[in-house]
Length: 259
Length: 245
Image (tube, rainbow over all chains, first blue to last red; front, side, top):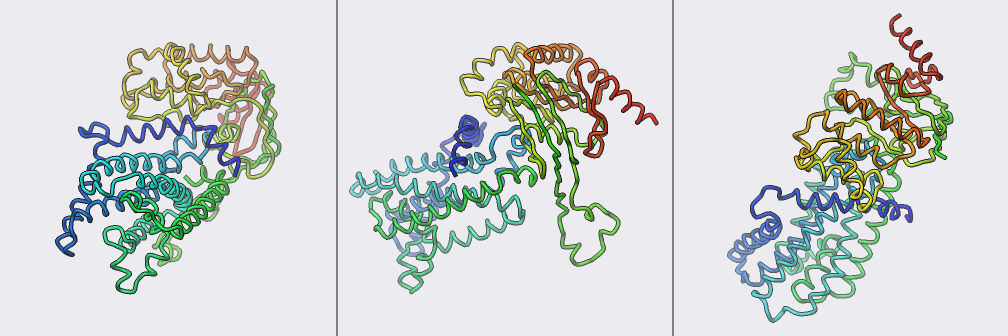
């Protein structure tokens, strides 16, 4: 485990340089550039919030921020898991040409997506100030530990999915499907209360993504999640991270042959 | 002291022959291909090799003899399936020179990233940028995205970076084939200069003249085995003799 981190540290400059390139390359030649990473989730939240506001009669004023605060972290987690399946293949020429450690490539995916998430969260705060000025306050800073938990969870997830996909190429489309299922099963574009009212509380209580979302979304909206929620989130994140690191270490020398 | 020591090294590749739905439904539909019978390729077979400081080793042999695999093994990209390998010294390798570039990025950015990959610090590589730019003679082309480069230009760039970091062990795979005459001359001078600092060079080549003029030792690989090891002149002669038979 110590070696895992020291190898990443050894190639930290390569990692930083790759992440920079990813971020700059993502919106190459586009006019709005990085603004898109704010506009896309904002627009999506507006569309979903507007439609649901009409369908369920909820006020868009509370619904749009709630969806925005849930959707962005979700896009981060599922996007990371999705992108991670391709991370080694995309870096094939580096892995076959140099001794750069394979550990940095899943991490590269996580970091790139995490920075994109940070932009959109900053944008969220600016918007939220107008929507709900009375809920705006220092409690929101509690989303920072939440984001850290989510970061380690996603890092672990990326470490696992990247290796699975190397051994089993049908995994990527399968995973997309599973994540799509989770998207609807997790209270993201609707309130957890709806499931609770109908006696389907267990659906989100056994869902690891739910806890990850809660520790980020609640503080972003100006509430503090309960300590049980934190215990569950930290537990899940730690377990996923450890498994992920273990999988990476076990497969360190095999990846080059699987490309 | 730089040294490369291989003791009874074997390298076996597993060849993925994917099972398709067709193979399951129609058994024997693959009987015309025996590729999937042997699922492994014995790329290097019981290699014993001791390369000491100051040695310039040429590796010759047929396509598929295991030459490039040997270089990748020494540079720690592939790992021995069995046997022991000890490598002392900083390695810089140049394989498949046309890959490993960020095609959308400029030449400067690629120098920077390649330098980092070879283990340089940002300050270290930035300090060497000028020297690298001068050596590769690409001038204002360095401001252009690499995707517009010719293969000769790519090889200039890659070779310049790989040798500028002053490696103890330099591994080159067919590296100079695409360069023009002037650059090949320049590159050979540089390799000789590196040798004066008493380091190790391993050069995979199909040019017997290069092997003789640049190297002081030569091995001939065939099917993953060392067939002959010794003076470049003698080894290349017997290799040529073998193929013209």
